[in-house]
Image (cartoon, one colour):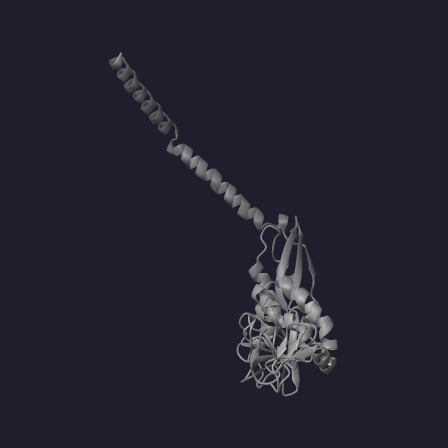
Length: 339
């Protein structure tokens, strides 16, 4: 029985091997050549159709362009798009067509088969205006200088010593622009000027509010969260500056501009007279670094800061009590040293 089993197993292997050789023989070189020819025809047909007049672009719609260069931008895109087909849109050619216009940030393109092409122009949005020798130029958040964009009084000013050497800022002014680009909308609307000093680094001036010391342009989201939290804290009313160089230890001060360091516990400060340390809520907000926290805190700060700035002395006297250290302890968790 065992011998019979082995014989059957051997015969089965031989049958399977024979069938495999037969299948291999069926795929002849002629068949492979035919398959290759069909594939070549299909690819060639697709390439021919892709660039044929059957799908040529005959209607180009351009939307989103504005300002003094709008007509020129539309004309350049219509010329470039008219040489394409709806099955072969060449983005490099479209981008080259609008390269002379820095106001164009990028393009969004869709096709309307068989002959329509729709191009949406996404324009750069100015976040500030650089000023050199009394001349002002709008600048976008990535440092692109927008020569043809009108400068309005609502744009924050960034003073420069020398004019930019090209269409983009590469050195002086670029860090200040990045601070503006990262600003939450409620606070961005109140910024009047951004400068740099040797003592405090980047300094943001707020309309009807304190100056904000940023130091360098790192961790901007966290620094704006910290600034918004301090502005929203009633204990910072009357502060002349807010120091968010270290966003985990924000400080507000009413002194003459000396640096102040603050602890997140709100127990005290070290620095010049008038320095204020914020409570743990500000440091916690700075540590979170979320866009939602920034917007919420900034909205509160934008609505409360003007009145807080105007009632500085009243707040200091009505909410303060004597401190054993000789300072003044505010009820909102903000501490000011005596002096």
